[in-house]
Length: 462
Image (cartoon, rainbow, N blue to C red; front, side):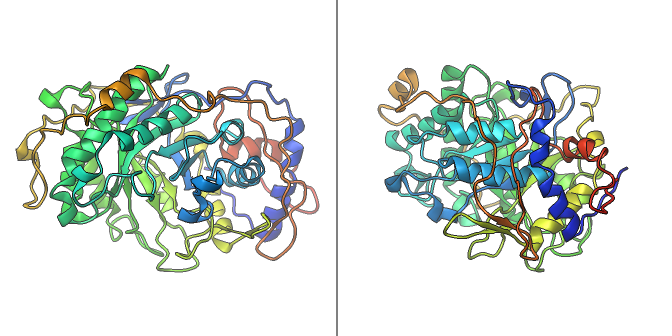
């Protein structure tokens, strides 16, 4: 296994040579390979290899970065996306998770940039604004046609992009036993409605799933409630296609056992759908050391988990940032960026991304039954609410947006903003490397180029 650890000077050089990669045999038609959620794995449609998510949560500005009244969301500004895609590409990221999006804005340029950079998008259909999410208490009050129209509009806004990996129907809607009393049937109903809309209006199947809180009292019941199927049928439209977990149990220099990761692997073994971390990266020890990364992509976990998403890209008040963005758009790398990049660089992703699905029968979903639910407070009623008035008509006709989303040509991949390293030095000539068709981002795509640059400016990389 190749192991590379970059110090600050070496990272500067790596960023400098990024722009030179633009001249190396770039295809004019760049698109990530199609991924399918097959049984309990993501599978590359072309190669048949399993896919491991190497992700970062991408929500510049936090909740404040979503301002529909000002026509602003994380994927609405081309120059911002170029800046961030270039840095995430160098880190080795192949997936971003984006939480709050305005379906009425044009996202063509940003989606095309991340697509060209070889990165998939996990898209949340909800937002923090009133009427744009299912509520944790009295969920029947928020489950109405206008809300569903909003979630369908997000699907409509992103279904045409080849790098849209999946939609999240909910994020931690249940975050304690009290919220598990009424929410489950409504949350599963939203999954049903989204899957029905995707099936009717998308030219390809895009998975719909749920992002759960790592709350021990309700986690197992949440998993069973969402992954089960009526009579065990995998085509149950209310059953999730994927199940994800926001977990911060590994803090500092923990271990597979002490962090609880070992328990999670046991709990999810035998899953009938892909399972992965939709958020991870505890910051109780700061700066973070990200020692969970080698374990997440080790044989201890890859048979059950399909990677994960680090929380989060930008520095906000909660102190989880990898970079700090100034009001003028300039950006400064934080120590966590370098540490995470070095943890990714230790791994042999060529080997990790070449695993095949195991032979033998695939796990079948359990039959939905109240016996699956063990918690006293968790709702065990699998009878879902019917569609609200007018919602059927919306699904039938589809949602019309101001423009039809599509991949567009990007003529210049050069970063326009100043980017500085952790030591304050300016990183020059930063740009996105446009990948060839059927490629997703991996640090190996950069290292293959670096192999001919072993000795430049006194640096040895390989």
